[in-house]
Amino acid sequence: MNIEEFKKHGHAMVDWIASYYENVRDYPVKSQVKPGEVFEQIADKAPERGESMDHIFEDFREIIMPGITHWQSPNFYAYFPANTSFPSLLGDMLASALGSQCMIWDTSPAAAELEEKVMVWLRDMLGLPSSFSGVIQDTASTATLCALITAREKLSNYQPNSDGLFNFSPMRVYCSTEVHSSVEKAVKIMGMGKSNLVKIGVDEKMSLNPKLLKQAIEEDIKKGYQPLAVVAAIGSTGTAAIDPLSDMAEVCEQYGVWLHVDAAYAGSALILEEYRWMIEGIEKADSFVFNPHKWLMTNFDCSAYFVKDEQALIKTFSILPEYLKTNTTGTVKDYRDWGIQLGRRFRSLKLWFVIRSFGVEGIKSVLRNHIRIAENLSAKIREHSDFEELSTSLNLVCFRYKPEGVTGIDELNRINKQLIDLLNESGKMYLTHTKIGDNMVLRLVAGQTNVTEEDVLSSWSTIQEIAAKIKSKTI
Image (cartoon, rainbow, N blue to C red; front, top):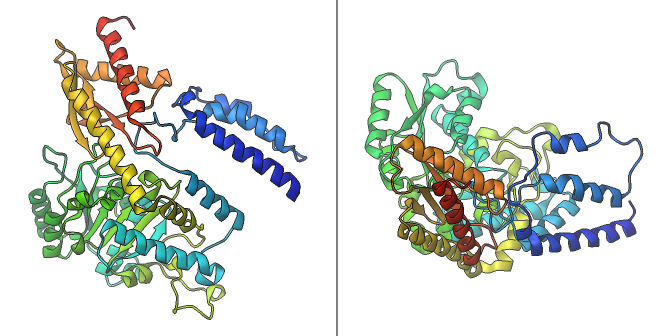
């Protein structure tokens, strides 16, 4: 492809993208393909000779698009969103065009210094302590792994990095039963074993019980374990529950335990001053992560990781082979030392575009609108005699269908499973579920960048219509 062909096809694809966003509500939100359907349509062997971009793009439309679940649809209410926006797309387009490898300052000075500055912006926007230093990771899962490895090294005077774990008592990590699965994956990767991940019970709000945390740590110390770290969830995956950070911080301080705060989704809400109560006690935390690629209109991947002791992080991960030594080594931030990866994308560029384009007040407006939409839906659910609202946190509403006369938990779970399956099969929306106790509940997150109240009210009408058909057994 020459430069003129690139211009031609580039313009055509930008036009297609614009049209896609204009018409995204017309697509079935959840892909309707069956397993293997896309695979069978793709050629068994790579082409020997290059194909035309027109042909490739035709196959994209005919083969790939039917197998896409549309995360950017305003009617995508599942999981937590993976949002984007036009400024983010443009920033990422430039980053891809530059093709920068941002492992050290010398390989991309602007990328390193923009990342450093944008992380200061984010820190201040969220109200985090000025003592925190930030780095962009790919995901919160990676950030949590980095936090726990750093905690292990600092606790053990960095001996495991050189000698392994053979001379140490088993270490323990603590979190609530509602914390993200990445914590369990991290302890597996670290070789600790999931039996050394202690899951603490929660209260009626699905938040960790700090008394049970203290009790578990004390019991483990008596048994000869080394308490290593506590992971607090600010916005749990299932219900966006908020752990009592200040109380947990006191326990961690008392026993010298690392405190990592996972605010992957809810962290964006800290830009709103009225939600800063969620991180009361953050000054006592050792590390904090949130994902702009979830609720900050910045496309995947972009995870903002902050640490109180940057030297502990660097000492944990820094390796300096001869080929990476430069005249600036030791005088600048070389972000290859701040995590697992050596090679790094230019992630800060799209984030810079988003923050500058929306402005802090514009971002606040989007977040408040999403929260308002969810609160209005929550009120409508509470008014309906056949539905039960179980929790509303930020812009996540958890509810279930509970028609009069149906009381058995197994039957309630069955009809809610039927309801969510029918809703997702309709193509009109995409919901996921969670469990609150033994109850299966539906989760609706009003968080896609361009979602409107009209979108959610229309979806609520569809939910009621299909539920009524289940009740009357006409479906």
